[in-house]
Image 1 (cartoon, one colour):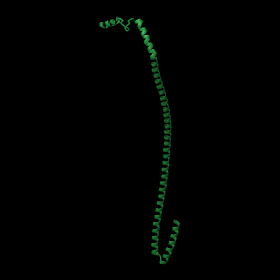
Image 2: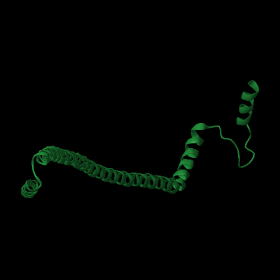
Image 3: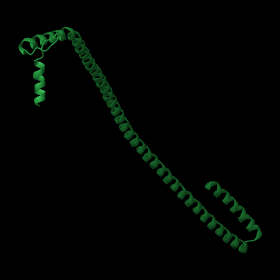
Image 4: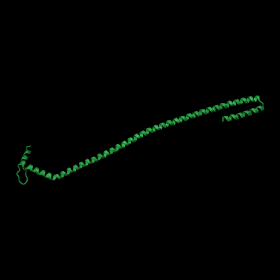
Length: 184
């Protein structure tokens, strides 16, 4: 450490041998040198510094403008999206209401159609029952009539002569024709 200190002391005692040398008088040399350096820096660096600051200021302003434009665009897109959302929600509600109405209408139509079909089936059933009753009644009448006719023919054959027999048959045929006309 002593060598280092000695070397600074040694530099401070150099004889001025020419135009260049160290002046160890701090009060006389440093303020002048500093003022010259600052003056040169201010004179030459002022333009560069102003250009750098102006460029930086312009980049910041451009960034702010771009950010504002992007923000406005985002706000506009958000408003558009909200408007579309409201429209879609309204349409969805309408579809839902219309769907429920359509379902209720279809339900009522199905109930009415089923009710009509049941009434028709009931009518067909009643008509079929009436038809079967009539057919059965007619079959019973026909059998009774045939049995009565066979019994009468048997009685007539055993009791009547040929002439009386022919007159009875003719009278019965006339009576059957009249009965047939009444039933038709």
